[in-house]
Image (cartoon, rainbow, N blue to C red; front, side, top):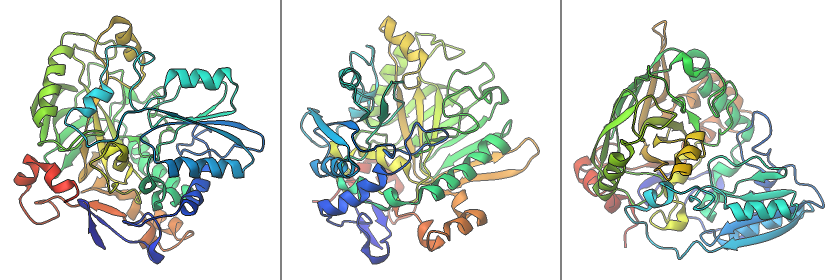
Length: 455
């Protein structure tokens, strides 16, 4: 193993590209892109993986990216799709210069008062590109980095791989059938066994939250929270999304030092009572800006929440791919930031606010009211369910997804290779006072000093 940029990479057999600080050729990247190009598409029934596998000879594909994508990644996808006989047009929009992250980047790219059609957020598709794909009758639009995509009369898939470290890694080639089995095992604990039970969510950085898996939320009509949820690409929901009912009881604190898309911040503590954020402590400039938004949001009663206030806790998304790694240029915008690593098995991100493109956001946008949701990442999570019968069910234990140690998962993994290798995390963050030497208090005051590359 080797230390690298604030974490530990477990090097794969034969030095597989993407396992660590390995330089890859374009041909290497094309081989990874082919895995995606042949993979089942996101919108296929009961599938939560991104792929372009329905592409056939003669298809017209629009691959629309921005200037933060590495041109080698874009070319790799274009070649892989052209090898399938498709005609691929590439469109690149200007996202501004690459630079180091700043404290408030997450807030700038997520929070809005204007409709996303007028002011798109970072992860969602650009409306005029979506319209172009429609009017020019493309068979497939490949565009956007995350979140839901609108219904279209053409195929529409995302492209979250910005740089070679994203695409050329074991997370891309991780067997999809095995990944799906891991997802099913994990989701069964929440959907089938946990219904009506109590969850205790904790983390070594200070999170301590409890809530009930309310049976009223199990109607099956919530996107991503039903018997066969889509969005499994690092996004199994550990709490139901809005709308909430008065019985919502999530209470405690969520603490951490990273979000999706900003510089690491002084440890923040988000205090929650009965689902709603009541106080935000610490967080440096990120925390200061969030507190101002919290005060603004408390003046509005959003239709998806039982009481006034914008910042309610709902998004407890669980990553499930053990081969996801933190990008080596994590300090730069074009790394995608910490949003990428939330896909790693056992990592959770907790979101507070309105649901991405949900009806409540449409309602707020029409009125010029603040909407959006902000994140805190949990890297050493424990997520435990106590069922109505009193049975204790571990979903995550100290950052390790419990399904990875399930005997049936290990047996299934043996069809693809060595279970020990396949089911081990490729990357584990090093945090002083938690799993590395040094003081956590020092880390919590200035985490960027420990996470960002030296020199």
